[in-house]
Amino acid sequence: MSLFIYNSLSRAKEQFEPLHPEMVSVYVCGPTVYGHAHLGHAKSYVSFDVVVRWLRQSGYRVKYVQNITDVGHLTDDADEGEDKIMKQARLEKTDPMEISQFYTRSFYEDMDMLGVLRPNVAPTATAHIPEQIALIEELVKTGHAYEVNGNVYFSVESFPGYGKLSGRTDPEARQSGSRVETRSEKRDPSDFALWKKAEEGHLMKWRSPWSTGYPGWHLECSAMSMKYLGETIDIHGGGMENKFPHHDCEIAQAESVTGKPYVRYWMHNNMVTVNGTKMGKSLKNSVNLKDIFRDIDPLVVRFFILQSHYRSPLDYSETAVKASATGLEKLRETLRRLKERRTGSGAFDVEPFRLRFIEAMDDDFNTPVAIAALFELSKALNAAMDSSEGVSEAGRQEALAFLDMAAGGVLGILRQDGGAGEGNGEELLKRLECVMGVLLGLRAEARQNKEFALSDKIRDRLLEAGIEIKDTKEGASWSIKN
RNA sequence: GGCGAAGUGGCCGAGUGGUUAGGCAGAGGUCUGCAAAACCUUGUACAGCGGUUCGAGUCCGCUCUUCGCCUCCA
Image 1 (cartoon, rainbow, N blue to C red):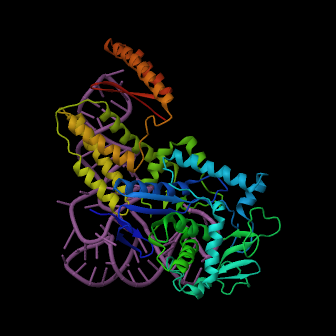
Image 2 (tube, rainbow, N blue to C red):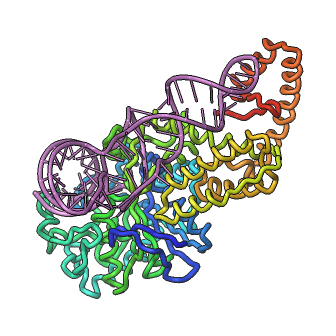
């Protein structure tokens, strides 16, 4: 059994073999922090979170680097327009640094809600200006870059493989139909900026050998990836819309300097659409995570995302998310029943489900199929628990261990009960259990005396308070609803 | 115009040649004081037209439609 990953560069599934055994280097393009994170960010980072979790589950040590782009690049094209972070700073009447810090915190808040594990290293572009300048110097020295009027451009002509990732290898084709007016100071219209001279009033700027200015957008990823992970990394992830030009430029910058392959496996996740159309920061239809979380359990959002494949587009709608919520509740319900320790004598074999799950995850992280395996397990477990023999202690333990690994550790769709720093919550939960014990005892008495009006009242009132009661053969159970 | 994806049952969403994806919703049933949950039964889908094949959502061609990229974007 081995892992296969779809490599965007070769456009085929390839068996995964890391450069160094037992150690995997992963770099994923992080957000530009000038606004709150939206559903698209969620899809991307949840997807790669599961990639990292699965690699770790498979026994690899993973070093996961995800940058924060806190240098504002430009609002409309590579050569003109306003710096996005600066623009936001103007709108919020503050300065760029405050903007990037504020939205960085906001980003992590949202990712934490989604159960996305923090990267091992989260470098910011502004903290790596010297590294970027050094990379440019190297490119200039080797003839891959040139300076004009304080701006430095990468010479696309100097790198024969330019465009190999996106398939945009024909210079003519690359230009025809382009919506950007080409700037005359470039030698070739496809050349892209490595360093830009700061215009009047530009706030985020640094000294460099060419001008006081700021780095080009594509540069930071190459510089930071190589700094923290080495000249060749195993996996580089990002959104599909960044294949061209961003990732093609990264390849050009890095490989021109090192002469080595920059990335072994390129992974690109597909986009989120809303009502069938693209959702984007620059469009007005972006669905902000903080807004969604007001109505929907973040883990439901996570589950919803994982119910489709990372390379498939995901269309967001209320009805689809609600359907996911019901489905996730079903899985949680099974787990709850399993934890209630009603041990029987019947054997239960989780192995077939485990194998299906592993097979799905090894097949390019096919989370929808992996989830289908969990639903089948859930159905089988419920049926077994309903049967007269029940489930043996051994079977129960095995199932719990598997669900903890699969649904908890890998997919991250189970609520973490009382993690570190939540001692207070645990304390409260214990008291609640105690109170519920009292209430359910009283209700059981009422039911025994056929005082159904009273028993129903207890149940209804508790439901209003967000606690649901279910009567089963073994007595009443309760759970907290959202 | 160029590059790249995709069109699956009421909805979401897997599936790269041959006995079932899965979830949600719907229908019937079992259980239950009722409810909820759970379980059982139930759906002959694959944009259209040709072609290859013993056999095609699954391969090939054409047509139609949608989406992304070619400007910052996960």
